Amino acid sequence: KTYVEMKESDIRKMSSGLKQVQSQASALLASLPPEMRKKLEGTLGGALEQKPTQTTPIRLQATGRKETVGKFGCDVFAGTAEKAPSATAPSREEACVARIESLGVDGLKVEEFDALGRMAGLFESISGSFGLPKMPKLDPAHSKETFGFQGLPVRMRRLEGSKTLDQSTIEDIRREKIDSAFFAIPTGYKKRS
Image (cartoon, rainbow, N blue to C red; front, side, top):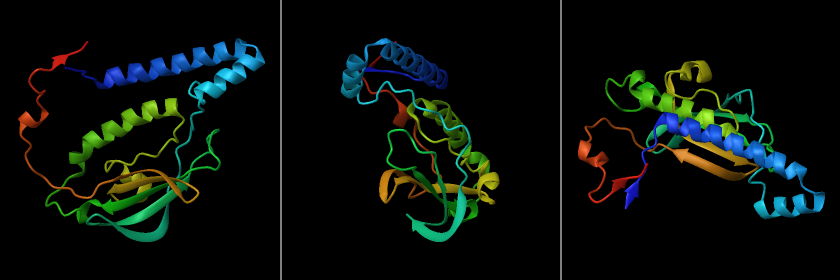
């Protein structure tokens, strides 16, 4: 039984390495005879395809819709991403954003969400490797720039036509102490290097 520890720097290196492998594989594919290239591309299903990175963030705009996600009332914002080469249509991104003061946690401060901002920055740095759309800054510290108020997206959804491609939801937020034992590596596991 083993476990792997991945730090932010490891994830960034992995992303950079993935981009290099994709670039090398694309060059190799381009050098093959057309019939062999077509057969290999069919077998790999576009896995080696260099996916273009959307350079400008999607502009999310208020739709005027209000919804409830979990126990939170939220305002719906939506925007359209550039069409990915493998997609049949451009994807539509939606964020349902609850105001910080309505999250139901007394004395909640925007700074308490700093880890979300760091995670979002890390995700943004690697998302281009997978051809995902570039999102605006959604963490509470930057939310006023994006939405006009300090809020937290409690639902993020990516749609193609009427089909939901992926969705993440926050249904509850509470402040409580977490026992450090919760994060301990189980007995019998060895760190793999």
